Length: 285
Image 1 (cartoon, helix red, strand yellow):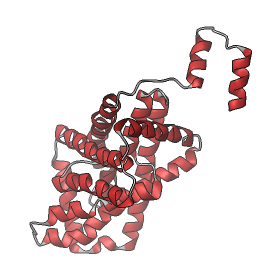
Image 2 (cartoon, one colour):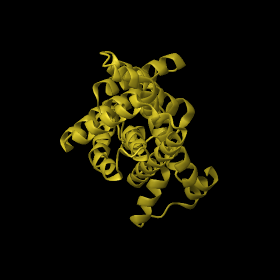
Image 3 (tube, rainbow, N blue to C red):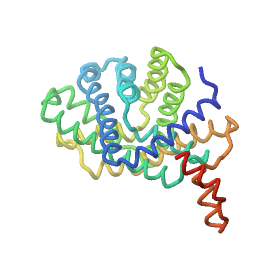
């Protein structure tokens, strides 16, 4: 298993890779759309497979919801896709380490959020066309889930989102520390089971739930917008600060500068780089 310091270094590498991938914005957006669709798979599984247990008032319904939904994050991590909630942690660690910039971080956050939304919207349209939501139990569960979220106050949504992405990013963090596929799956499963069973708020999962509701005539874009107004900042705090920033600090990592950042700083101060050093950098590129 990787040490915390090794995992921070690996995460910084991931941040740099994401910053490079942003140059191909079309490809990055499509990857983010895939992540949105994969999260929506989890929501459809809940509505299709667990709704009969909810309808029968089974005391195990919440635990069953938590047990099946982690398939969504498993798809994201093993198939490979750009998910907003984990990107929050990865890009903040890259920025704190000085290997990626604030602009890289913000662009990555916005791009993944937009792509995730488009992915959930496209998937919801396909689900609507499939007719899978025509069962009475699925429609009833959808109505109850949406009504429950709409009834929450802004502060409740925010703090549930903080707790949610703390757990999600802990799952991703632990996934990166271990090497065996079985261990990775188990470590993804456990924290996600908790957040779903307890009822915390994941902004991308909410996108998928609300877009399904919109196509089924049970939700509006205004209701989705209100939810995201609180859950997006909450997810940033939970995953970025409570996991990313905390582990960066406890690892003893120090902020560093890349060669390009150092060169820009020297240029700003009017300091000339020697010809041999400049030539060596040119060759290394």
